[in-house]
Image (cartoon, rainbow, N blue to C red; front, side, top):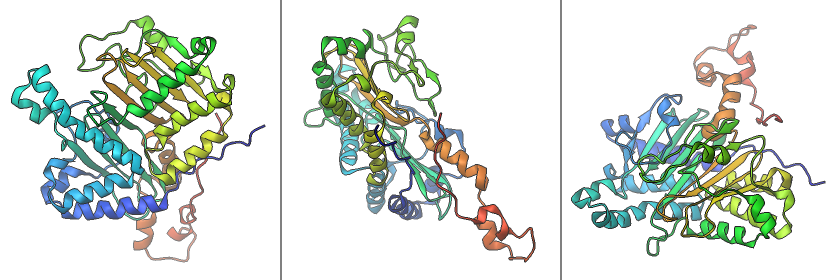
Length: 397
């Protein structure tokens, strides 16, 4: 019997400290108007839950294009603080690919001069939610076309980094190929299966138009894909397609890790970890240990659509706690969207609920610093909140 996987604690003190100090430095350089655009004081603001990376005219935050000189350096330092070196290089490649798209679309879509406004490597917005401070709960985000990075800091002790979504088009874009490697890994994996195993893995011959879980702030017990990809004409799916493609958290479709041999299981785990390890090492090390120790029966790999690179295709990998989706359906396999999600803690969900249940939505530490320590039973220093919080461990489902 394998050892039970250790619970992910989400503790990342070094990463959180760097995020906090860099955020302070960046905000302090902004003019009052730009700071007001960048900072949304309420962590519960519903705009934080809109992590969709399609082009939109109403983004929150301040784009890179508004930053100058050292502000841009600070923005890049903050961006790197939430990513591994490989993840950071992928993000930079996603941004740079907007230059390629601009030049292609001048011809292909007859965008003319407006392509320079629509495809802009500086059109990535930084937004800060809540109160970035010691012991506080806050978050920040970087979002734009084909990129959505979402970070939540709980009590200045725990960090979540999902949903983490990237896209790419075309594939490759010259030497830029931010998502080419995992795509090739997935195809090699599928082709390595025996015919019987491939039959188990392929859940449908039609790929969804986009993520099966869409862009919901938290994955529910059962999610169905939309029949179309917003803004993309010409690719639609039927109700029967949607039913076959649905994700049921308690009973994931596809092939179970328990049915794979050692090398096949290792290949599926490597593909899953390739996505996870775009995040900061303090967090991804915990996920890696959990993935490698988890019962293989809880790991599932599912494929849909064509089985070659130049066809519309989709795959996903799920565990009891994690989900990766990669959809390459439109443009004949030349337009991929990917996301990895923590099924319990996207946008800090369960961690925030636990934190609020013990400390309230605004905490008590600031009040304690400002109220005299009266030697009475109702002293603020005698409340349960005075004691150090326990590490939150997700209850068994």
